[in-house]
Amino acid sequence: MLRSSFLRRGYNKVAGIFGRAEAKKQDFPVLEGHPAAQESAEVALESRVTVQDNVKKVMKEFRIYRWNPDRPDSKPFLQSYHVDLSECGPMVLDALQKIKAENDSSLSYRRSCREGICGSCAMNIGGTNTVACLKPIDGDTSKPTIIIPLPHMFVIKDLVVDLTNFYQQYKSIEPWLKTNMVPKDGREYRQSPADRKKLDGLYECILCACCTTSCPSYWWNPEEYLGPAALLHAYRWICDSRDELTEERLQALTEDERKLYRCRAIKNCTATCPKGLDPADAIHKMKTKHMLSQPMEMVEIM
Amino acid sequence: MGASRGPRLSGLQKQVLSLYRGFLRAARCKSAADRRQIESIVSAEFRRNSNQVDRKNFLYIEYLLRRGKKQLEQLQSPNTESLSQTKQS
Image (cartoon, rainbow over the protein chains, first blue to last red):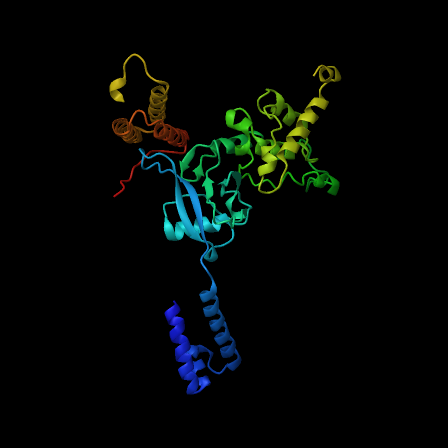
């Protein structure tokens, strides 16, 4: 790379002696007849060469969890990869893509939108559950970044985990509008702006599973406890003014003590949400709603 | 693992056997030719794994059980007709 730039400069110097115009046309034959474009193209080429010479390598170590089901006798382990950050995008997902493209194409992970809206690339990066496409790489090259799959989930391969239980719990809260009445003009179910504002902070959930897999209560009872994500969505439908079966929804959640009341207000969910939502608050509001809807004698005893 | 079918089966062994039984029951609901196909593939797979996989390798056995349960759910759906296998060269 250095040699070609040296040769190019030498050639240009020699060509310059014989006339600058010819040298330019040699470089960009497609720009003949456009002297301004040729000049700017020449400048761009010079600056690119200068930048390439000046940029230094910044090597960062990533230690990534690996397990291959096709090798049944192998145990899971952390594999080290070294990535040049100066040639890599800013987010952890960019580093993973670079590793998969250049280093090791057997590294498996889920990804889709690369902008933090699909929730596919959720994983545990440096101890916190986030989506890899929204987490910037920590520039400190003295410490490795450790990337492991979402905790307490069954691993299918490398960073891919089994989320079927999570999705089934989301399905079990029936996340659709339930009404008995037909709207007045027969067209839309209307809602005032104030009522719509109540849904802010609830509908943005991308179902990445970061909060649910950070909850210790969910770790110990994944089959029974619904988890912060499902409960956030349950509250989103409970407080929607267009939904009429609020009582039934609350009753379905609280008929046994394990779906909602396993929450112990640990608040790991709010701390780890990559979209900045507050599931702990939604759960608290649902508990309050349920307590207040019960007859006064029972509330006083509790 | 087949040789240890004595009076006491471990919990994991019972799960494997019940999964096998589930597959055979699902095969009964399909047509006769499909049923033979399913039974041959499933029994070959279980036998191969019982010979090759170490009985202490819980990590891998549990992984196979989870995968098998998902495949069984797919097979039990009325829209699925049969199973087929391709060989990795």
